[in-house]
Length: 99
Length: 170
Image 1 (cartoon, each protein chain N blue to C red):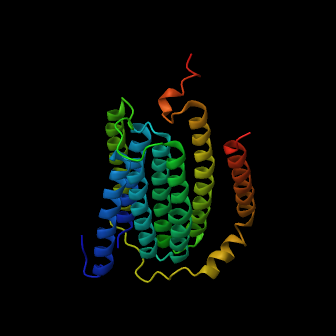
Image 2 (spheres, chains in turn cyan, purple):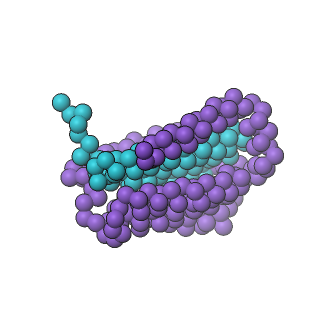
Image 3 (cartoon, rainbow over the protein chains, first blue to last red):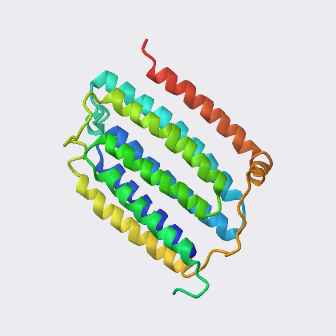
């Protein structure tokens, strides 16, 4: 196995996630794209962990999984609040801050 | 490029799982149904767990299945149900400027691929990598990484309290 095959796979997933964050309007789908990005980072960390023969990458990956779970919890609570106040979760309608 | 000591079975497994993951990820960002996007995301996350096993990280793989596929996906499906009255295909999930995402993603991928190719070229994984046991990982977490673990505990507590406060009806 090459090191690069995992890193390229992670890069592909990262770019797909970035495309999703840019292209999607629905807030839940944007959160899913962010999950794609976080997962690609995890693949990178574990690939480097195997390459270097060190366990640090495993620890970082576990911490990232925990942070991602917290992020989804707070993010979906905010989406719920948005829906309750506006009956819509389209992100481009949140334009009160526009001058 | 393919030397004789390349492990064929692992590479075939990697290629199959990688293809499934990339197709699933593309479906997540292009499908017109929020529930289908969540289910395709399950495919991607399960594929990631399989790649973790290929990378000799079984504890992280099991945690991925438990936390992501078990908990986060249920949260996503609940979020979809609570915010969307109708379950089905919708036409207005994308921004009106969605096509700007394609050149951005392609340029980012080209930059990453060039950097990775020049940085790691044809380096190989060590063929005799030991599987990381749960005991070694816990020695890491509760040894040198104890302070980040405490910080993470407070972050999780704050996130739980914050989610309850935000979503509560009052």
